Image (cartoon, rainbow, N blue to C red):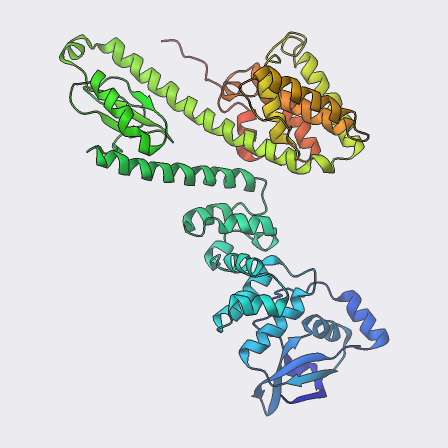
Length: 471
């Protein structure tokens, strides 16, 4: 392989279109240094094409140095000229850039993909760059994120590695991937991710359930609202469970509902069976019962929406606290603990806190919530002896509170666990209860919690019932 070092006019040097690093960044300081001390390290270039009788060279290593030289007004720079094939050229750029800490995960991923496209194997890529094969496979998964998805947000390039990994989860669902990508740079990323993961789980369950229903000669009715009772049927019977267990339940259900076939609908991970009315029931049905069923259907639809919101919000809060609790400083902990202690003791109107005994006797749920908030769960798993379970875990809580330097953090986790037990689906539809959630979220926001738009809407009363109009 021929190697030579020559001074080349910067006008004859062109950036490499396959360079993993898409932005050389601010080179002002580097330009000032080059002005004073000269260029200390030669660029690596390879012959490209001729232009107006002049040989042009493609930069392989040294894009930042070239940009700085141009800014400094340097006309000629020393270059190592190498004859390189496409694979070796990309390999050199990727290896050199991987050794720098400011290469983004997406840029690195695209670099691996470029070499893969030229015939390199995963093992070879790992060996050349000093990475593990699982690491390279992870980066290649990120590289497969389509260009149209990347274009969904101007902030896409700023996504963290963990966010890119989360986006790649939906590789088989480009519609969902695009939905999540559109949240880049907003505080709604975690909410949308949780929402999409839930949708994937629900759709997988429903697909398996459809197979079980088809085996029984049943199909899902998608012609009307989930909760609307079909004409000639009465309000639903509900079943939740795994698809392979449905046949047994359905057999028992048929014994109690012998008239005709049911109408089957889904509500998330629930099967709704609308039984056909018997002749006697049809004769007795009147306008009052129809109205009652319509009201019940509207109630169930609103309740389902609150339950799904509450589940997602609870998951986001507990995940965030567990991830960040060890990073709060003393001032943050003292301020949060003061607020939450007052909230726990007195509530928001001196009648809904610990002193009034509102909800704080449910120790089991507090301990369960604490386990979700801490990176070190309590040691005693659920046993048949609930008294022993509570006693053992409470003793461990007390021990942790006396560990030097841990008291404030443990107090925060315990207070958060207690407040989490108060927030339920019904909280969001009650004007009094929602004030607890509002105060809790205010404290979490001061700690850095990124409250999503959906959570803000709920805190502002989107689930509160509208005033009934006079009939």
